[in-house]
Amino acid sequence: MDSQTQMKQIVADAAIQEVKSDMILGLGSGSTAALMIKSLAEEIRSGKLKNIRGVATSFQSEVLALELDIPLIDLASVSQIDLAIDGADEVDPGFQLIKGGGACHVREKLVASKADEFLIVIDETKLVQKLNKSFPLPVEVLPNSWKLVQDVISEMNGSSHLRMATKKAGPIVTDQGNLILDVLFNDGINNPKDVEMSINNIPGVLENGLFVDITDKVLVGKIENNIPVVYSPSKVG
Ligand code: 5RP
Image (cartoon, rainbow, N blue to C red; front, side, top):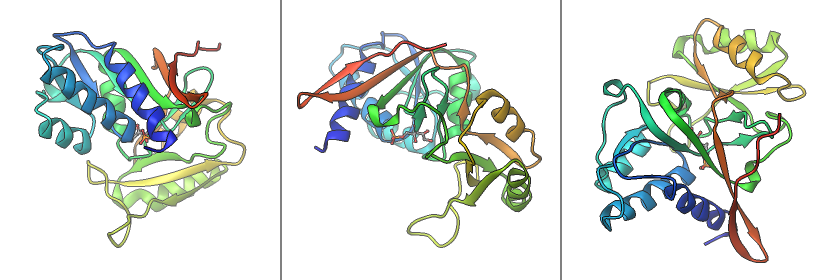
């Protein structure tokens, strides 16, 4: 196992310690969340956790949960989620996030917004001082509006490109049947709340990957003296 996977595994296992029987649990997307879902399945199988119901944030997490016999309920049928656990692409010192590296941020944000507690699990490569200096901000757009949105974003000093698929000609298509623009601003993102709102205001945009003032706790996996360890940083500001 490479060192980044070791960091992801230890943080995924640590997150499951926060889960209690009878919880409705938001199941995040991406490789760290997938490890968390596998650890959860182990705990359910061993009988340590009982009566867990998961709410999937993507087709990926839905398929994985079904394969691992984790009971699922539909987002539309829950009014409240006890705990949502998810990965992130960038986390700043104030716990503002960029998500959507796996193009799942629309449902991830819906699930997070319904959760009493939103727990982020990352390896330490995801910690940044300022968002969007290197990781592009994913923006989900309706298929016929991508050029229009791209032009407006360029007026906001953002450069963007349509995310292309691998092993399929053309762009990637999200779980909702839309496209993704990946956006880099000239000097990163200074005010995540303003940027989140301004981008979502552009006609044709469904949702962007900025998660602002929604994260309660972050667990970080790192390697110390060749041993994977977990810590929980304090929020700054
Ligand atoms: C998917 C996400 C993921 O949580 C994010 O991309 C992190 O993924 P990984 O754990 O594979 O690094 O937001 O839309």
